[in-house]
Length: 136
Image (cartoon, rainbow, N blue to C red; front, side, top):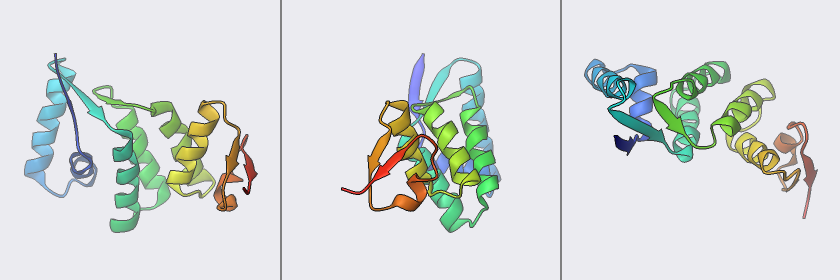
């Protein structure tokens, strides 16, 4: 079976739907994956970049961004490392109004059994239940 990874802009095009030609091509690519002709991978950095682009460039609300990220993670044809970490982080991002990168780092730490974080950015990390926040 053929394997490939997809760039952030592919997922952005799929989400934003601002170019019908590109969207249809992406849907065909996903259909190939559904037919088990292809396995598509998403790098963790792409998820971070998607959130940043949707928030900063497209000015979407966190609730909408969360729905998009959850839809990507729920697409069986797309494989993503750290999927469970992103599922937890996107909830903190929206529900606790935390920067997404901080939510990812906090959830990653908890996933690895690391309950203490050293940071000068206490505000966001204190909102993640289970984390102990300390300054160096």
